[in-house]
Image (cartoon, rainbow over all chains, first blue to last red; front, side, top):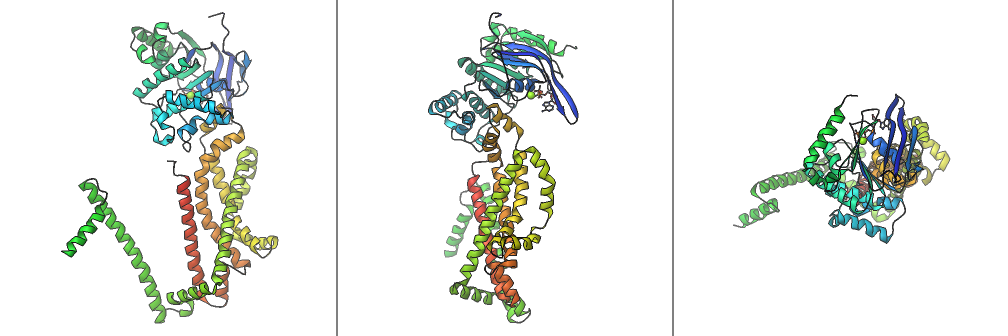
Length: 258
Length: 281
Ligand SMILES: Nc1ncnc2c1ncn2[C@@H]1O[C@H](COP(=O)(O)OP(=O)(O)OP(=O)(O)O)[C@@H](O)[C@H]1O
Ligand SMILES: [Mg+2]
């Protein structure tokens, strides 16, 4: 692992938000890296700066200290390498499903037959090709989230940022979508960073987990998931005996007083 | 027997489309109520007209001031046949449509400009509040001097009365779009104009359409007042003229035509709204 070049690097990154009321230090001294093709999860309590880390990486905001690098180059503005799935689906209700999944391509002026076909193929992989002419209001929460995933993948990003993409869904839908996301990302060889505060979800889906402390967020611990838990789809790894051990461990780390 | 056949038919109408006996009872109750409402409305209208006619005939009310439905009708018919009415109606309708259209357009454009720059929006905010609070018809004399005593001044009045409120309402709706939609567009690298085109404008479109409904009414106010002040044509002019020569029958003819035209315009905007927004929930 050591001889590989990191794909994403956070070096001494800090972020302090300033408003009229004062300042909030969301992140302090964040250091980590992610290799190409890895699935890394950021696990931490609410308000510890998880979404901030993703926004920094997506180039939506600038760090107040340190540097964020993708392929050794500092991030300065939104990049086409990145696909960002927000905490909710944010589908545009005046567009059909097909028009929704083409939004990113439209903004990037990449609409052509090949790309449109690719987007529709992805929609098909999500099992939604029958719904291309529907409107978001006619779809269930799980379907809408799958459309949002299709929209994110349609611009062919190398890196996927997933900000609690399942938090608004019921448990069954959530389990199904976890499998679908892992399967799809593996198939398309994407690098992914998932944000969650659900320990089981983190173990079931990722290769590596970074546990963050409460505000200001700092990385408290790093946990490598063994291939026995990594290789099966999330639904099956939840059933393995090691799963419980990891759950207990992480639970302890997260609740350890500092 | 004939009678039972007839009631059977009526019963069928009342319960048509029912899926069960409870549903049938519900539909029946709903439809009977609807029929009663309509009948009462028609009855009230006729009763009112009849009362008005009788009162006028028997001199219970001042004939000169209140005229009567039959006189209003016969003046209407003779003016229509004489062709002069069409000229007045056309003039007023064109002015109103233009005032309405331009007021909405300018108001929306101003809102876009203000949205574009936070600084501009902060600067103009108190001015908008003052302008909005000011009664626009008070500007009449200034418009007459500025645009001459013709259509220009009248249309300016129609625009003035709706443009500020449109700016405020549309700008507010731009501001109220969930910032996460903007964030979403930015993750794809959207520029400010793309954010506006792809997200802000379509998201606010229902609000813009609903200001149309308000603006239809406002444009009528502006245009009629404008015609009171300067015009030689139009329904507003007919009202003022009728008043000056003490021909109140003419005033009533104009009033009824205005009521009918305004209703039709409003309904047209409502069905436009339905058509344009039918896919949204
Ligand atoms: N634009 C902003 N202005 C000021 N403070 C902010 C802003 N965005 C976030 N914060 C603050 O920074 C801290 C971290 O926010 P962030 O959204 O990154 O947390 P999070 O870990 O994603 O939380 P959650 O699990 O609730 O989504 C919070 O305390 C929040 O109040
Ligand atoms: Mg968050």
